[in-house]
Image 1 (cartoon, rainbow, N blue to C red):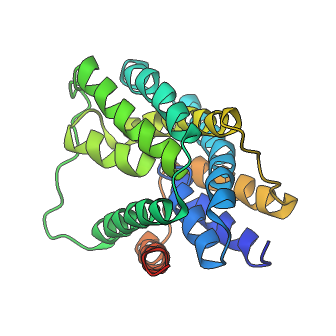
Image 2: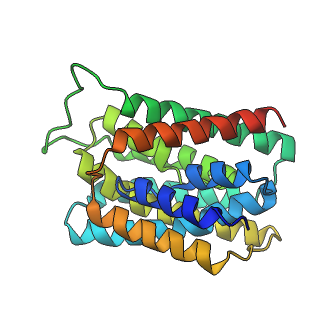
Length: 248
């Protein structure tokens, strides 16, 4: 793999883990830009997701932010759907278009988060009532299928939806997102193996970079550095990768 890949992977893991994400969209963008094949990109992103999401889950659970009643309906529906998504083999052209859309949406979300707003939206109250279990299950199933198909853990979709639904405060949403990504990534990998695929060999420097970035980011819990510049940079990378996929 490219020599700059471990550095890029570590930075992605650091940024995303700080908010309970595992970084799959960032990994996909980086690997796409250096020209890796889709059959390598999807499982590699999921493997890195498992590593970083595991660390983020441990940190948020230790901090006492996890809401099991919010997590279990999402996870119960998402796991079988992610398994099915991981078993499906989209034509390369269709895969590239679908992932291109995911990266573009992710870039827009990062831009929105980084853009200063004079009147920020109020955060959910500590006693917010979560959506009903059927709603959570439907949400989890849809995101799980998309996760398996594209090689993302689904956090980039789950987090904004839960915040819009006022399901929980931000830290609790992050604490639910991390294990949600973990189980979806494992299911997506399992689906790929069941369908006859193989797990790619991920180089030790890339693994070490993901572990280090994920550990530091998840320990912070919330990014305290000049995060806006990093968000804008990551949005630019995602947008560039999306354009490259649509132009393929």
